[in-house]
Every structure is written in C-alpha cells, then in structure tokens.
Image (cartoon, rainbow, N blue to C red; front, side, top):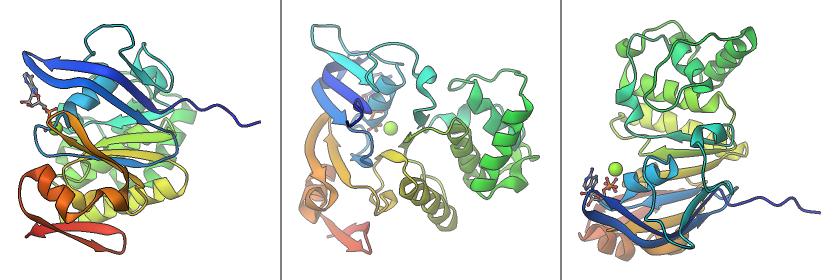
Amino acid sequence: MTEFRPPLIEIRDATVFRGVTKVFDHLDLVLEQGLSTAILGPNGAGKTTLLKLLTRELYPVQRDGAYVRILGQARGDVWSLRTQLGIISSDLQYEYAGRASGLEVVLSGFYASVGVWGHQEYEASQQELAQVTLHELGIEDLAGRRYETLSTGQQRRLLLGRALINQPDSLLLDEPTSGLDLAATFSYLKTLRRLMLTGRTVVLVTHHIHEIPPEIERVVLLNAGKITADGHKRSVLSSQSLSSLFGESINLIESDGWYQATPA
Ligand SMILES: Nc1ncnc2c1ncn2[C@@H]1O[C@H](COP(=O)(O)OP(=O)(O)O)[C@@H](O)[C@H]1O
Ligand SMILES: [Mg+2]
C-alpha cells in the first residue's frame, strides 16, 4: 500500500490583488512533494506575491473552488506546518533583530514566525539540535557571534539553519543567493544540493538562472502573473523561452547541469 501524500502546494483558481493591482487571475499551480522545482520570472512577475499566498499573508478572492492548500490544509497557520515546510523569504534577512547571537537565530526557528522576535526558553535538547544544525551547515563558529556583525552570506546561512532546525521535508526559498558574492553563492548552492540529495524537496522562487542547481527537475515560468511554461527543466529552459520571459534577447548556456544567460 502506498502512502497518500498530499501535494506540497495546491493553488486553485486563485485571483489575488495587491491593492488595486490584480496580480493573479484564476491561477492554478500544483507542486508535488518530492519534486524540486524552480519558479522563474522577471521582476514584477508575482513571485513574492505567490510566496505571501503560501505564508498566508495574502488570500485569494473568495469563491467556490478557489483555495490555497499547503500539504492538504486549506486554512490554519503555516507555522504549525513548519516541520514539513520551511519558508525562507527574502525579507527575513532584514527583519531580524541584530543583537541576537547566531545560536539564538537558529533556535528561534522553533517558535518564531517571520519577523517576530521573542524571548523564549530553550530546552537542552533544543540547544543540542541547534548545535547539530550549525555543525551540518559548517557554521559552528557563528554560534556566539552577533547577527548584525556578520556578512550577508553568514546571515543567510544562519537563516537556513533557522528553517532547518525543525527538520522540514521541504524548503521554499526566495532568491536565496541574491546579494552574495561568488564564493558565498557557490557554498550556499552546495548546501542546497546536499539537502536535495538527502531527500529534501526544494522550491526555489527566483529570477536568477544561475542559482538553479542540477537537482531541480521541474521549472515553472511566471510572467505578469501567468504561468507561461511548466515542465521538465530541460524542455522548459531555452534561449527562446528565456528571451520571451525577460523580453530581451538571451543566449542560454548549459554546463554540467547549471545554466547561465548571456546577451544574445
Ligand atoms: N503592496 C503592493 N501594492 C500594489 N501593488 C503591488 C504591491 N506589491 C506588489 N505589487 C505589484 O504586484 C505585482 C507583482 O509583484 P511581486 O509579487 O512583488 O513580483 P516579483 O516578486 O516577481 O518581483 C507587480 O506588478 C507589483 O507592482
Ligand atoms: Mg520579489
């Protein structure tokens, strides 16, 4: 008997406004557990809006048959699902109280929702798990450092640790390497690859073609709130599809399962 696994994310017939702007009009998108996916689109495509639907900061217009389900659940607090889905938004980096230590940032993943910083008591087992997480990410040395004194790359790794401390099966990341230098980018991507190779599902929301690791199998192209292509990465990514997505002549280069774009 195979176990029923609900989709990781199921968006049906979602019409979503930001102010008076209609960002999505009858959007349908289903992402299965176990299939790592990149959602690629230019600035303004609706990527962050999509993420806010998933964190339930935004809701679709109410009508019959319109819903956003996360792991089969149509309502409720996304943070109660955090052992199954870790969300790392791009705003998180800046919302953090800087005085916390690296260890506290990772520990806060047990309780805190995005942008909320509280004073909690942590049990010895939680402290231990935080140390293990820091070790797994190779950043034990950041445990005692103040968050605000760290580089962007170090901060980004601590936020990954904060999501990983709940040992989620899936991770949803918004432009995880933006603002990082090459070494920090490569090291972050190496960690993401390891997480996928050890069974985590990654959903990557991005406009950076170079941050799509080889282990990502499915690519969804999002343009002005519409899905313009969806399927296996190799069939979706081409010079032609990217030129049309970004409205610019692009030459797509593939090398060892990685992609780069150059002006055509
Ligand atoms: N707070 C807001 N009020 C009104 N319109 C918004 C707001 N935030 C975003 N938008 C609009 O929604 C669209 C999608 O934005 P967004 O989801 O941020 O795109 P992306 O993350 O792909 O760059 C854009 O047209 C943007 O101008
Ligand atoms: Mg965005």
